[in-house]
Length: 445
Image (cartoon, rainbow, N blue to C red; front, side, top):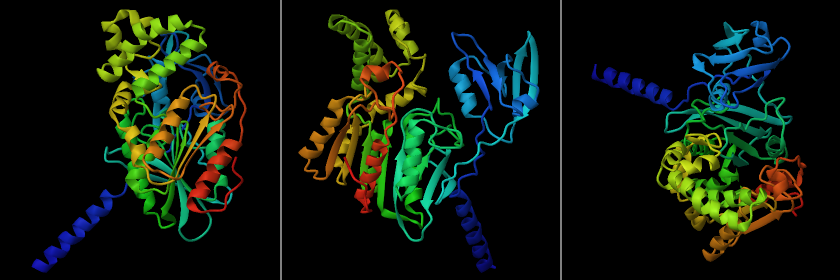
């Protein structure tokens, strides 16, 4: 009897353990299949401009000109809310849409279609899930060459924005092309991680903070290293923008084989934001005397209040009303992320991670990147050399801006003028990754 009881409890805890280590299956993302203008100029509601033929909204009877005022009971009061609702749209789940037409309410339940998953010739593509220690289940996408045995790999860590790392059909742009080329041309296993609230992942990207993002990356890398087709001794981390600053952190923690940083920074976020504001003032034609005056009276107190004193932008402006006309951020967000994200980032020791790096380092910087400073990149090289690091390279790519685009000047990029795609950037990144893990490489600049 005692033996049976022990066997029962052993079986029970074995089953319990197996359940706890599996992330819950995520629903598939969807899209509006329509052109919709979100709220603007403090006017609530999202206006339908065009509907795709036979789209779920069209079949439900909605028309161009209808103003969507609520989705699943959430009022569309700002562009931030509209963005969050759009990111949270899921296929095959009834979604209650409330709209206004000719001053009359239209309310219907709509079931949206799943976005097609990406496919790549000659590669296996896996859509899987991990759950971080924050309890958030996130989508990871792994692509693998169709061959046997353990293979070298790349972990891609993207920037801070809430944009997806998925290259689903119909999506385009230079960053999307960068991802596709990495996946299809590297000859390596590649893993990407969707942030909380992005793509199929649980959560709300507009509320998720820096440490939540980091927790997801950590969980994904630990999971990835255990894959039977991945050589855990040959994993390179490639970080872009914010991901480039996290790359050495993750390489140190998980004993990865190398670091590739693309569009990186080194200083604290407080220093970083002040440098950006100075460059913007220059682009806008301010004299040097005007820049000094505005930096001292407006931007120092604005970012000191948010980043050092841990206030929202609204709280800072309430204390110093003269800052209102110079604050282009919303009440409690910046670049789509909550102020808590940047407050945690301000306190995080990113620079110290570079002092501890022992593996090969490759850094790509565009000469027309007005977001990240040239000085930060050279500071990283100086730190590496001061600490006896031997295998590092900094390549300053002529004309490249922060968004994988070639421009004539930094100001040309700042003004939003169209630039050119140059596949040389991703070819360089691929050749670096192959070099670090010992694969045959293409020619390097």
